Length: 101
Image (cartoon, rainbow, N blue to C red):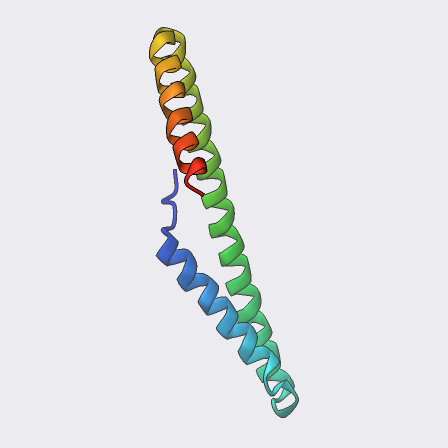
């Protein structure tokens, strides 16, 4: 499986994409057609890379969430009273937090 980019990597890619798009949008009328074409290709490559990274991150997050839900389901199925106790404790904590508002 491919390495999943960290949030720092994604921020860096999004920043690079924004910088590239800003470069494309600013002063394109002052640039020659070949320069504009180069900027367009650079922007497209950066956009494609960012989309791929975001897609991989979303897929990994979805997979991790499904695995966590499956483990939680198995735990509660194996230990129903623990599940009830945990649920009640969470309810009490939320009730306290809400009542403080």
